[in-house]
Image (cartoon, rainbow, N blue to C red):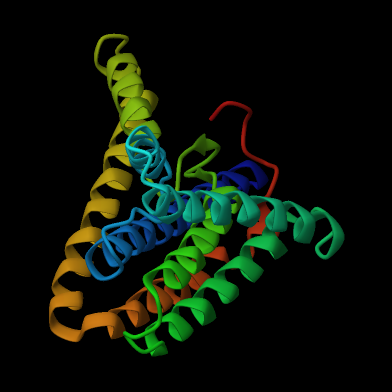
Length: 239
């Protein structure tokens, strides 16, 4: 017969699995977004902005103002996405993180369906602005997976760092929990890569209509948001 403690442990394990699955779905969509903007819309990285800042600096050094505008625009759209996210969280969802996640998932699914329906004649700049805005929403609102492990949902540098740190603590420090966390971080990087690979093949097969796959990934993510509010706070601190 299960005790109350056993029931709580089972519930926590279930919630951790859901959050991990959510993180894998969202970061896979992030990889697909980057592949889509790079391969179909002018070789711009619309999710992580480091590459765009580097390219902006290169064009700025060359006094190529059109090039500067090309890479500055998605950076600005990303910042606006963060600001809008903060405003919607505070003013619409009253700080409810789980309601906000569900709203973002629905918004992104609709947004990428609309992007898929845009004709190829629509300027790349407009599409990249939309993708950067959506990437900002994902980055701002999907930050933890497993229990309370932090991760980046639209790029991989921070996740690689966390993988290396937890791998060291697990292997050298003989900490089984940290070793387990390192495997989850590795899974995140693999899922992002899988999104890029999936994007490559679907774009080759379907062109700009491949953006429907991002909508499908976010619809899949709805399965894992579920009843997070039910299990929101029982995780031990620092788990």
